[in-house]
Length: 121
Image (tube, rainbow, N blue to C red; front, side, top):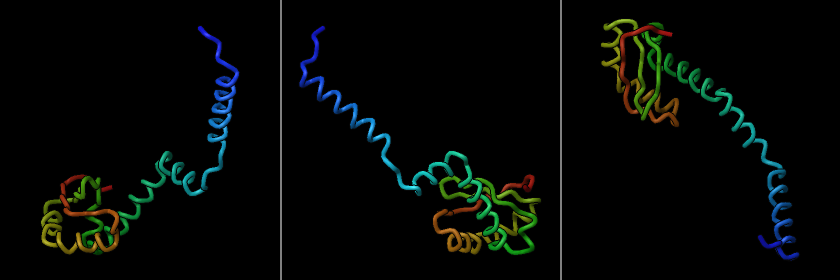
């Protein structure tokens, strides 16, 4: 194998120095904090808590203790309810609840609610 010429060796050394410097450059604190929150799951925990609070406001004091929001997938919010009567009440108020959640959580993009009878957390 051929030895690199002095010019090629110099270019290679400069490229290595630039690469090391690029790893050592300062990054904005906001991007570092966002990355840490994403990695730790703290951001998602906060989002779930906000969704629960807004859910309680949207459904009112009579339905809030008997229902709990679950996963939000592709705009569809799964809701856990205590019994079939609560499920029926939610179906009657579905449009109003969706509008209330959309105004309170514009980034969530909720398009539908699907209640399921199950345990409430």
